[in-house]
Length: 146
Length: 388
Image 1 (spheres, rainbow over the protein chains, first blue to last red):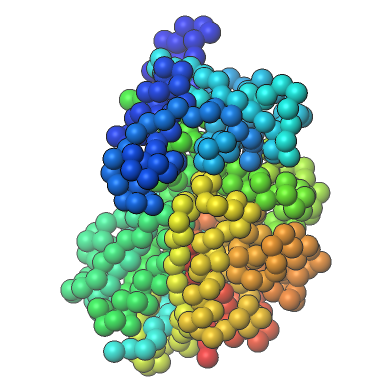
Image 2: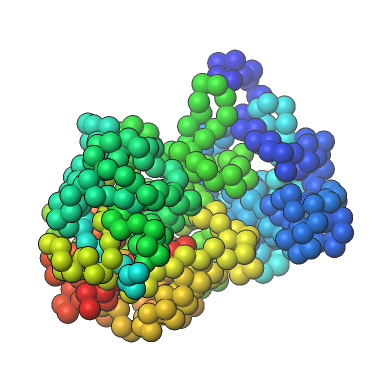
């Protein structure tokens, strides 16, 4: 999709790439749900998603709704080159969820000066240019951990 | 069966921003130079090893060299993590008897033909970064604006830096030391161009608050090749053999190259610890036995992580270790004496290996006195090279 076909105000964020073992994650995000992969046999949650449980080697998987609550483990602001699809430089963060897994995302609704490791965040969803969505995170008001 | 393998020859093209010729020609020129350096007839090459993401085909290169009958060809994953792993796998192949003369190469026009440091949006849609080819895990980064190796590396360093109070200014000591080395290395792109800490601090943000421009390696055009054979055969060749005293790879659970976000403790580099353990156990040597270290330096924080991972200092101490000239020529552990990937060129780690060979031959521009053992690391692989 070239930029001259994009109506003003339409989402510009790149779409996620759907791969067979992670399609549930992005389909869930498009519906506004943060989903994780849990082993249907030993119940271990794994991220990134994978076709076999590393603990018991079962290939039976189930999706579980994640809490959407976590803390910022690490964060950066990519300045150069400007990330494609972002009108303003995003805050990229590694989020550690309550379930004990980490994932890369963005932190929104926060000033860069207020960013630091350990702040408590909760999930939101941001639209992508192709009509999908990805999970992003916003600070939980009045709560800070560190 | 050979007990040890040795580096018998090294070769390279010039390092530039626009080579003006094909990547295959760069690979062929570098390989021929390495074979000439060793004094081996290119027809005798029977082993070929490169990176999975090298664009040159084995048969295409074998055709250029006129290799009569190649009996071993393999490729190694993980981007730059393949660099020292090529030495490990070449040594394993030679010691096992699978082949006798291995050419390892990496040749790239990653400045003039494509850009390693930048994302691209192809006309057909989607978003790619050439440096991440073959690394499926990066699909978790791209929709969030982390679209370059610098952004992936910075995010993996952030937790460590906050915990130990490491600032971007601290990282600058690595850049200043390496650019000092590059300034007196005629092979280096930044020959004659040292920088100060103030220059480092004045350079623009690439990924705030971790990496400035002068924390980043270059994008370079060029080729590097290394010839590995048995120690016995190497003794009869042109150069003093550089023995591979030990070599190792390590891919610990949940570790990824560069987008290294999923292992248990973000503040350590488990792959470097895994490589170090194997290298020291297999060689009987210790960090104190190294006169220099060539450490994969795509970005400055990686140098700190590896200094700790390989036991040159303790966890959290690297920011002090890199100061006071410690990692410069004449310091307790000269690091990246060619200028590294930051100062000399970014041939995906391979030019740091050839510098270790020059040091151990005693032919380096920035020669370390009494260099006997050198550690060469790319995080997920490493080797201890020696002239004894």
